[in-house]
Length: 414
Image 1: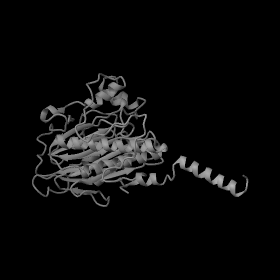
Image 2: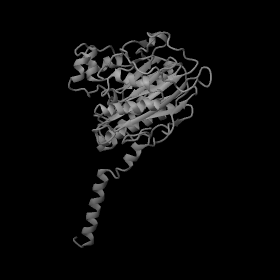
Image 3: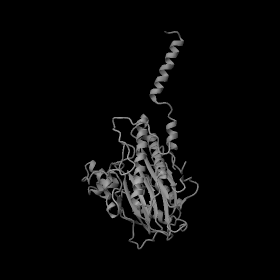
Image 4: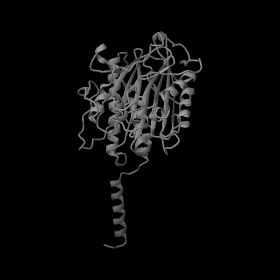
């Protein structure tokens, strides 16, 4: 788990066009064959860095083994071999130094805690519903905290969360952090940025080249925690043996083009080496934002190797209301719906009605009642930061007035 402040735990190109990389002929490996037929072998490493410009790190990430129920300790690569596999979350906070740090850390930890307690399943639609429920629970935690603490009001965060089921990666997306899959020399982005520039590109109003220099590059259409509910985009990727996943914040993909990312993922054999090389490259390119990279290698006899160089990952959004082929789409209805709200393109239809994990919707005119998170409060840097804030302002006023009155009475002024 990345703590605020960076370090290890304590692109305008938004399309799915693969970026080829040439380099060493040594391909990435998850380190060994899967321990049992039918199981995935997942090996992961993550790094978060403050960058070269920012005063603090508002990025956070979580890597955990769902079977063991444990977060990564940051001392050795996470090796997940069980039926449930690993869970990866990357969040990029916003709302000022304090608000951004609290939002991203709280969201990442809540997402992990929700998925750790969720039922085990290998059904894609069921897993997607559980992941959506976890995202919505994290949204509510951040929203509630921002409503209770005046100094945190308006804070929010992006979230890219990846779990594994039935030989697929299942992804939940809010904002413009990204998930890529590197396969056989090609890099494919398997999320859709929920950003203003991405909406303009997909509407044909901007080219990728124009987007690189266009103003408003950091404007996103949706963030976790800025409203009392959120609609994540859910997508799935059918995995192949030898795939390498990258989950990253825009501090990485905004500094390094996809071709550069692909080259590093190809030549660096171990996830740790790849993640650290990506961070170093982003810093060398200017490091204008906080930078987070989590690299996950995938192996296992249950997975087929790539059938050909054309056997590349595809972006596939999943509608958890449906089953089978009817649930899969090659476009992001969520991203299109968000773009339509700001006048870009046509609205494809109403939001997905939640099927599980419904929350009571609280109107913006009311302050929500205090809410305890999954399994009690969620420990972490966000909790510690909030605890350091001390008494709320109104209580300080009461204390000062009482002290003044006491001094006045003691002096016999009455």
